[in-house]
Amino acid sequence: QVQLVESGGGLVQSGGSLRLSCAATGNILNAYDMAWYRQAPGNQRGLVAVINSDSNPHYADSVKGRFTISRDNAKNTVALQMNNLKPEDTAVYYCQADIKTVGLRKSYWGQGTQVTVSA
Image 1: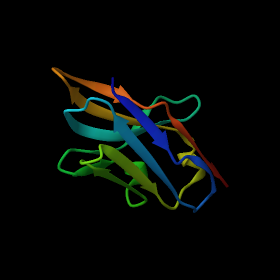
Image 2: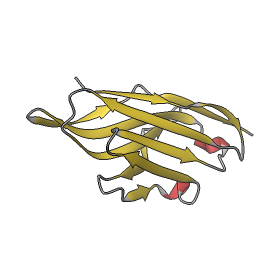
Image 3: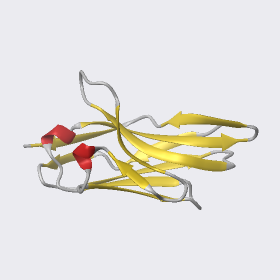
Image 4: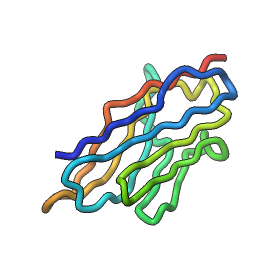
């Protein structure tokens, strides 16, 4: 069984930085796209950034130039470096990955980590 475990959330002042990490564990044959989503209270969950297996990233317009997504294919990990954080970045951040196990490829989600940015 595959599990995604996130870490690195917390409380930070506006303009500060945080780094989120996510590790995929289990019987993993291949990890394809890996991504970070976020959901603020009352809002739908939305894509923050995604990175493919060739480490090509794509960002939501709201975080371009402030956030950087990266991955380590050997360790099946993905990270999100968040700089110049703003109060509107406050949300629960979720790691998501498309992973192939024995005979099956599917999407997996982490449990979420809270990021709170104070004004």
